[in-house]
Length: 259
Image 1 (cartoon, rainbow, N blue to C red):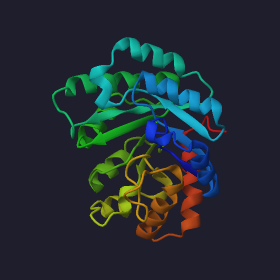
Image 2: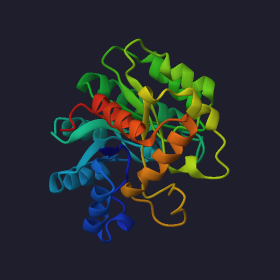
Image 3: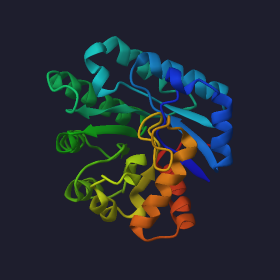
């Protein structure tokens, strides 16, 4: 069984032939899909998808790119959603210095508040770290307690940053996740993958983005996660079936509300 731990299924281009897309996911061996939110509206929309489809679970939260467009009332509403039986985590949140660095203070404020929310609700936090990995790690460390766990999503950091994440706590509560860009010819973080033991690894599609080879150029979807897993198995020099089993166990350990 396979869990796609990060797929943005609420976008309009994902709604076309939605049932057929889910059928392809099931045919590919996927037993659960986790849909991350980017703001209050998509948190609510993702819950609606999860209520309609057994295979879908959801996160609630505010993306760093949407922090400047959100307010504290949005977070108050998101907090109320955390008790929903199919909400399995907080996110995606974090920091993004690639698109805009003019609102870093706002990003950090919302990230810190969502770290606190994850701790209070004892839900894993899903962390976006584009061009911001060292700062994101520092904020997790500054706000850490034993109730905090999480996933560093679509990880693009250096091996030393991966090692810092893996050594952050003695309970092995944090996982590093990779997606379809690992299959690209220009992917440069192979050494980072080698530095992450499979017991601390997760896989995802980040649909509809980062479609893996051989389907690059098309809209990404959960069934494509198998190509990422195959590439990870190749880089880690391990059997694909062994990696599939370990990734599934890792996801179930982190996302405890998945049935």
